[in-house]
Length: 115
Length: 115
Image (cartoon, rainbow over all chains, first blue to last red; front, side, top):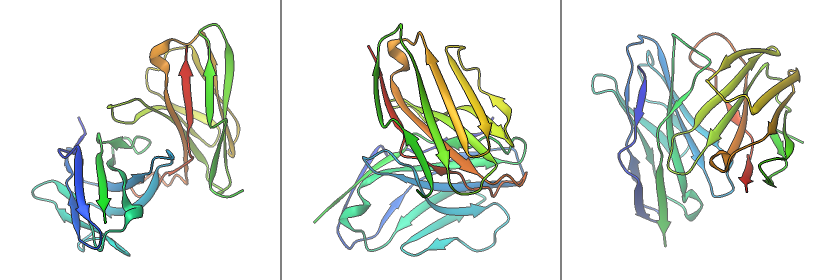
């Protein structure tokens, strides 16, 4: 069975500092994709970054980067230079090759950025 | 309108009411999804439509009835709901390629309260 684990229910970070949000996954698929989404209090899930299991380089999108360690089955999100607007829930998700319709989500981490 | 829109944003209904949630995507995608997000639980996939055909029903009770008249519109018809059905209902769309890279784009959700 596929599973996403986010062990940090809440994180605090000071503005302009970097923060790492943890995500570990479990799958028997050889090909899979990993996603991070941001959910502000308004409710919308905003796509941030994608990492494929065969990608040799860590994905980066602006201030977001994904620290992908395949052997450890981890896909941590790193946010550099945190901003107050980064305060939100962050969800890690995975899609396997066996059922490409399904995106499996973790329980999320609430990030709070303080001045 | 851009992206994925959902109406209404908030809905309060009694257990004997019948109501419908509407989702529209302006991204030219051919796959649409309904998710349920309850407090302190991972996002749960409910239904998937690919090219207007339902391809996934994740053991959802029959009091939830989806409808996909075309690739841009998705409805969720609700009848005789229970208080435990109160949740945020999120719609998403993607362009299916059959692979793991498809990114799902979400709407802002409908916050449903069942009295």
